[in-house]
Length: 271
Image 1: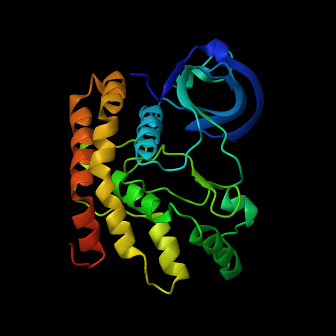
Image 2: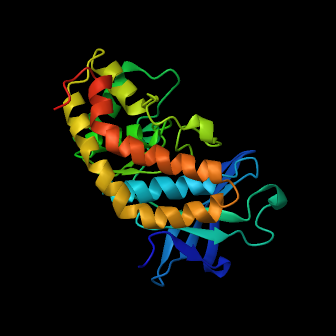
């Protein structure tokens, strides 16, 4: 079976355009990568500091699970060895980067010129983008399942009415450097999209039943992708069996319990 996550030779990095994010824990470049089908694509090349050893694995896990849920994502994702000399302090970073093709559009933060704190006008504009999006409830349910606590307004890309793509899953599950004890299958974790909707809707969440229903797909989605997930978990966690078991149990149990968990959290009758 052909894997979704591509393993690319470093020679597939064809060009570097610009630095789009540079920090002490991760650096992201906008580059051109020649993918497995032989086509070059504008691609984000994300390198994680050694202090975030799970960064690449988190991105892979999030991409595979979202893909299995048929959520809108960039078309291609992969892993590539960082060529020598790409960074000045390269020895401080993991030897492999996560690469993902560019999704069309811009983030709501850029489109609406979001300030801190966000204004009511800016919030209304963001809600206007989300309201017509057919995958909103599915995404909220997905973030609940995977304990994705960082779906901020820079982690979605908007390309017009109803056209929104999901990016950046390095904080999934729970946080970038999760441990086995962090993954509590029955825990309630923060869901930023719910927070945004409730603020904009006067504390209410009219779509809560639809969100709970969306969670019923997660066991099938998990089972459909578990073979490839297992492969990557083994690659990254073979020396850490407690983490390996924790993430497998966490996602499996939360998938099976999703509808009842959300129904309970939303004070709905689980039917």
